[in-house]
View 1 (cartoon, rainbow, N blue to C red):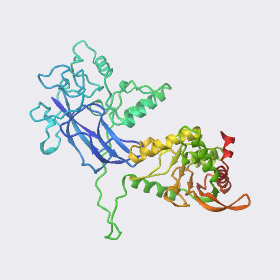
View 2 (view 1 turned 60 degrees about the vertical axis):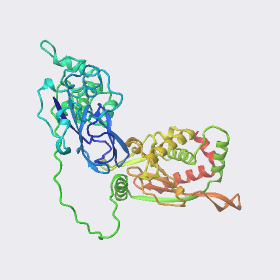
View 3 (view 1 turned 45 degrees about the vertical axis):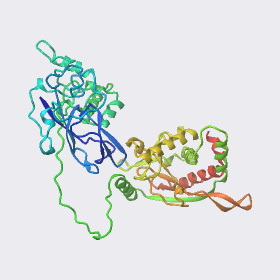
View 4 (view 1 turned 135 degrees about the vertical axis):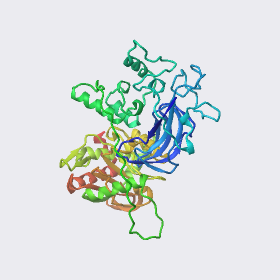
Length: 481
């Protein structure tokens, strides 16, 4: 007997509500293992591989490549069941993760003539859900509350404690979890997922299960442990009713490009920044000749090459140490300015998929060599579209080097909810008065856009002037090393 389970697009965190299918990693008829990636999706933050919490045969896929799905929409259905009659323990012919001591080396497709669960052959390409068979005949996902007759575990018979059998089952193999976000949430709070009883289908662990266990542990004033008593099954909220399409007042002609994915996320964030943040901009020209000479000398001394943006980042963190008001965010609900202890430095990166802002964590604690390596790593990940949501969020200050586009100046929009952004134009030869004489020097325009709620012009001007002094006289940085 087999049971068809539906796997829906999970909550990917960071406020994401939809994702676009980029590439299917499995076909209908493929055998999948627990936590095996089944589809690659693109969110407004990054490209993400979605793992399936069930082991079995894929019976249907929902959505073609390029289709955008909301969180909670069906992705695939999987038929899970006991081994077919005549198969032996460890043969590798049973469904992955159920009753075999060794998983197949690679995924395999169920071909015509091969014994498959009835639900693995949906009519007209659509999966049909069977009536739930008796509990003793259902092969449940690894780690669920019900035992099963797999080769490595006997069923709970007379005189045997069902809970004990369940604990044995949970002691081995992966645990079915609704999404990587839930797994991370449990890991960050030291919660052992094997000790939880999921409220999802066949024991699937949902985010609500983890949050319930954490709340229970908090109430009892101890380290996070799962609650002893069962909790009610969480029923998903019904999908909103379809609304009539909104008629556009825009002209009928022209090329229309949907504001979705990264482009849509950028549009939303920039619009919010303009609505909520009373920003102001100040700028200054600086002689970068000595900074360029210092970089040349550093790279000539051997070792890894130091990038210009790494030096500018080092200057930024030194300036923020002197003017910490600009490493802040505004909590309007509490009507408070929250000054942050750590500098997580974002930097604007233009890619084929649009503008993204990767974040260098703990930039204040890194030297120029470490900053260079991290900028290079994140830039490559941005180019290939492999940045994770965690690498695109949590910034406290942004460095925008728009000089790479061949422009001198800009008034950048603050990356909400940060409080400031430093813009750097191109460095080009210009006439400059140096030591009382006219000379050709390498000149750069620096601009600072700041949230006027966190500070006044004196603080912003002091920050920008310190940055310019470090650009003109790199030895100033020696005071902070």
